Length: 553
Image 1 (cartoon, one colour):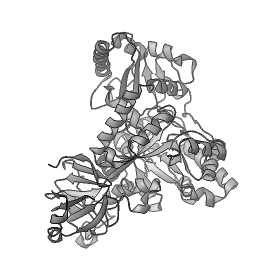
Image 2 (tube, helix red, strand yellow):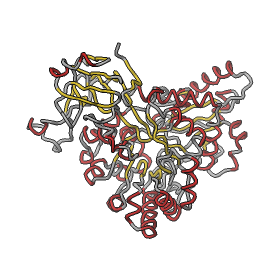
Image 3 (cartoon, one colour):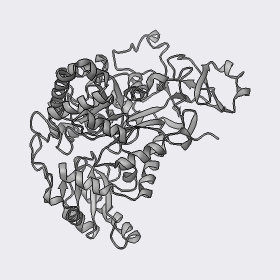
Image 4 (tube, one colour):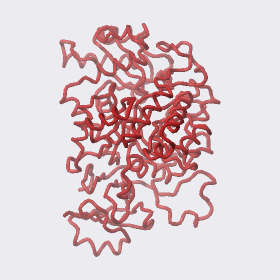
């Protein structure tokens, strides 16, 4: 049995909002309280950490990740807005990457991978073209993914080798969406076992360094194999492995309960047959299914449908939900556009007509992203007990009247997206995530995004957002019964230690009185995320009492 005493700091705990110290014995929180009491416990602890005013808080859960893609992106040519500022910069970065790869792979067998371009941030305001990739990279096979991961531009040699020009979603410019993109992405992820393992480890270690103790892996056939998912679960099964916990989902459509049971038999570690089982695509790639056409369709290479593309229809959605319910597991879907949400609601209603609302609710189905949630959709989600896995950083990256969503949809439609306050106040179960590598592993940015939504009526408190990014993730996976996501006696020691200049209670104007200190009394503190405040710095991350990341001596 090992024990660690954290003292002389601040503990974020609703059980004791004024706690200054915490004791962990054999992976479980066994005491928290005042610093003067901690002095008497120091002798019995195997390790004593002087926090020097640092914050101990529940560790984050990222409820939507793609670990293989994240690890591969880290080794790819970086075309994100922080790395390149124009199309010309992007092509030069690709040329440098090709020269480096030529030295390592003179035979030209390996494709050059690039990730993260967003034409909305470039003065040229257009995507690269295949012939430009050919010229920059000397004819090498190139796959350059858009930031949202739902489209890419490929070189002529890549397209030819993968047979993309015969598929739906191919455009002669080299842009691939829909089926052509799915095929291209699957080709890219056919990597060696050693490279796959390195990618998993790199992504998970990066998560641990950001205070993340658990992730929901959204595996699906275009992103990873079943065998890869099994390896990932085995790699992270025990805290002693030094990596965050993984909750495994697989996005494959089931037509019957037997289909679902067979999948659960073959992949017994699954929490659900859900995740990136896509009802539609993305707004950035103009493949999200909308009720009304996109506002900026000209030019739009590779996009045939002016209102996006629906990948699943209500009958298929209903069959999948019924199958998962009968098999006793979670079902769920990737849903971005309002037409896609309409179709999911129709699927819920069809499934409820077949099963009854009770069995549907009992399965605790989930939806990923859910940018459009109007009153009718909200009512259906509540009626059928559907939880939402939401990515607040989407709003901070692309929301608002000047963002990409407004360019694609028009300001009026874009203003209705990401209704955080409506969802939270209605009682919809929420968990937050990043969809990494679409947005970075940065949980505090997700919390900050809910505080800065351009529509002030849709902002929520930092504490509500923090709970959605901690306890909410355990809850959506059905793992909150142990107290995971909280720091209280008897709870598993999933925690992170943070250095922050200022700790505060933060809430939208009018939600928690700014003038009455008593309204804030007893509220656990969090880092101040106001503009100009330094970013919180992770000092240590702990899973079940096992240190995953450590900066203490």
